[in-house]
Length: 76
Image (spheres, rainbow, N blue to C red):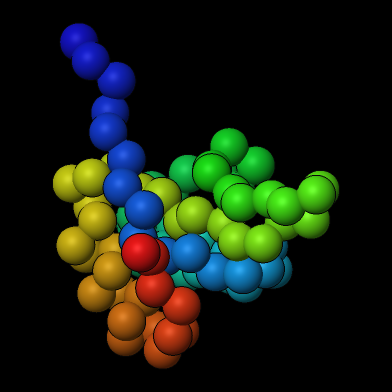
């Protein structure tokens, strides 16, 4: 059995914004990766962006949910 694959669905610039999105996704019944375990970009110790990751099979639903949520930050 192989480990589940995850996809990035958004890249917010603050941890607070990422936490809100993760909570919203969980409230919608999806399974985002905990922020402490997710990828993030740092430069000289300052966090610049955070990856919102979900199981790949939930990626389309998560993207659509976040689009309807109204946040303009998108994954690359």
